[in-house]
Image 1 (tube, rainbow, N blue to C red):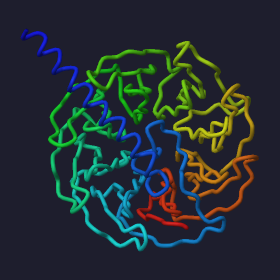
Image 2 (image 1 turned 90 degrees about the vertical axis):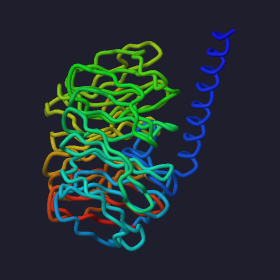
Image 3 (image 1 turned 30 degrees about the vertical axis):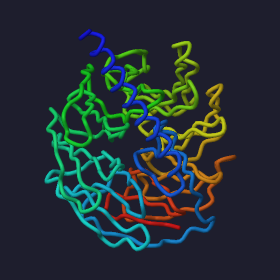
Image 4 (image 1 turned 180 degrees about the vertical axis):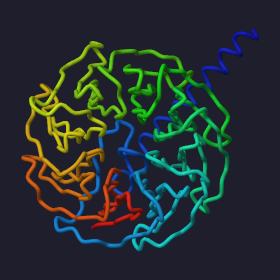
Length: 377
């Protein structure tokens, strides 16, 4: 009798968690036009915005963060959240750029980008501390010290939050109190932001492996070769994952067959891919350390077009309304035609742009390495 009650309780809690999870996915979908709640904008890491912006962009505001901004902004309910090298998590008004509050992480924030939802903001810093902060007033709720720096960005899934660390561990916490639900140890750094599909978190790793981890219990259910050391986050369309690696390749993996679909290498320029891909309409778009933006056919991996900048492209492209938005280490922010890669517009910042754009409510927000945060619309 006792065993039956235990099983019934487990089934109840499992069902309750997945109801929350499904609801949260629907909520993200419903908010997609007016929000950009995490790195790459959604659970599938597609880098596709639901909101379109004006064809002729103008600068709306700038904010001086005081140090390098490599963190990509999150946007929710008219507020921009972004980390800085000054050791601060900032909350700015989307319309005016005015500071609402700042939270001291004490140590610099690198490429870890905030995730925001259910009244909480999460971000990691370069000392390895993972911070949970109240979205309303910027007060710390809880924190957790991992074993090494954090450059991964968090993902909120129901009542849980996931984050990777350079200690080689993927962590799953209760988002409210910070209790560790589970942790999965890999064989090298975790730089990637997890993609979440049907209750599985997918990560690429610096151990050259692609993994699928069940969110309920942290059990690894898929393991495949990533082809090389990988810092980029996987992007998904259906059962296919797309990402670049430090072996100068972009690859497609099929979850159904558990095999590689295709592999792309530029025929002349052999450089690593650090940028995470955007995927839409049969196209895979990502930046390379070869100074180029590449657009590939999602089915075959063949190049559709390339666009050459003047320096590395470590910024991850975002697609909205038939246009590609991306920064470059040449200090320029580019707008490209999705169809043919032609340059439609560019803005020259004071320094390299390695952060990625965030788009919501018709506005684009992006930071630069000279500490400025720009808003265009």
